[in-house]
Amino acid sequence: MVARRTGLTRALRFFEPLVGRKWVFAGSGPMGKHRCTREYRSILAGNYVEMTSTWDLTGESYEELAVFGVDRDDRKLKFWSFTSDGKRTVGTEVAVAEAPAGTLAFEADMHAGKGRTLPTVGAGGKTHDVAVEAKPNRAKGFKRFLDQAFRPASR
Image (tube, rainbow, N blue to C red; front, side):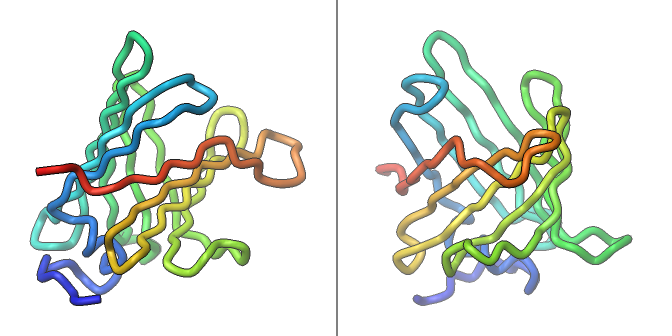
């Protein structure tokens, strides 16, 4: 894979193939038919990556703004997410043994337990998959409830 010049810091190199491109997923899941569009861009001298997501659900829209970067206090890769329903989430990178190569994993404390998101970049930067899992309070393990296979949007 040829690296694109995005000016990202070493900790954010995972996002290099995603930056500056629009990614689209259309399919169905627990929420019914939906379409999700994600865009990533390098911000603040490459120290952070901004992701904007727009979900077109049946009859409604949902938006997310997330910023990925290294936390100055604990030096861990994190995301800070803000959504159109007023929620805010902070996720921290974790190691997940069963995650495929090319996958990051982030865990976040949620109201009903833990959430985990697993973004993957594959096929030399031509694919971008995202899995989301939940571990309700008192549950023994994570259960996957969303798999999205994003592809670059047509220009």
